[in-house]
Length: 110
Image (cartoon, rainbow, N blue to C red; front, side, top):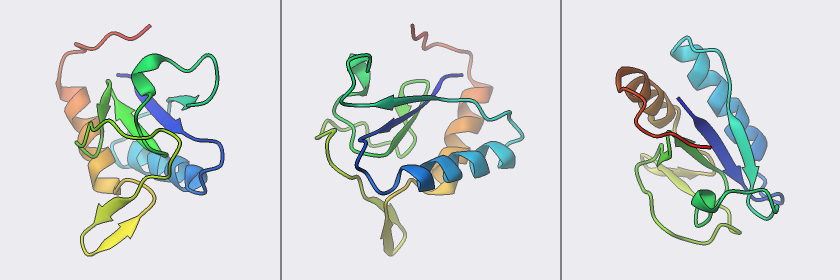
């Protein structure tokens, strides 16, 4: 399972996204491990471009299910019921982690 945190360095929601990831790992009893990509760096892979900041990918899929091309230099807003927040809902991350654990690893990333 490959978990990636995609962000833009000026985004105010990076730490909140990391905290949300840690809560999700704890909830599904998985050792916290993920790769972080800052979109403006030269070593950032091409597959992470187009996602707003922050975005969490599990095996290459956006945990929010959006998978829309956008501007990777903008802050992203997630809908939490009637509220909007700058990080994906915990339930979205937990569901993505659980789904990836139950599915054979089909996405191989270098």
